Image (cartoon, rainbow, N blue to C red; front, side, top):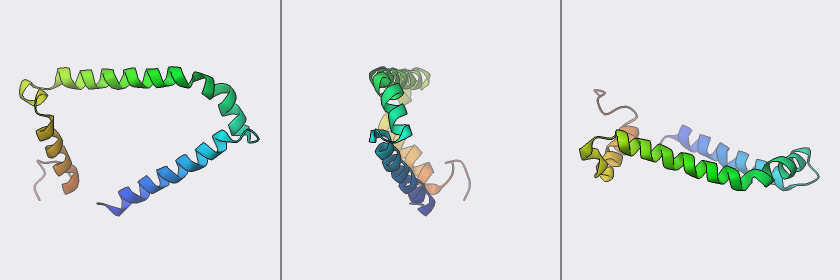
Length: 93
């Protein structure tokens, strides 16, 4: 695995921890804003996120060819192979 990918993932985790701590602190201005503005809307945001995910997967299924619809394992293996090689499958090495 590429070290840059791991570094970016570690940075995302660290940022998530910092943001979560600030959001749960009622004495912090960001925490007050989060508690007043975002927290009451979280159930609706979770529902919207779930519906958007469902619609995206439905669009992927509808636009996939007939042979690819029933064989996601083959499709994902090809995708992971292309990502592992660092480029597209058609690129000559």
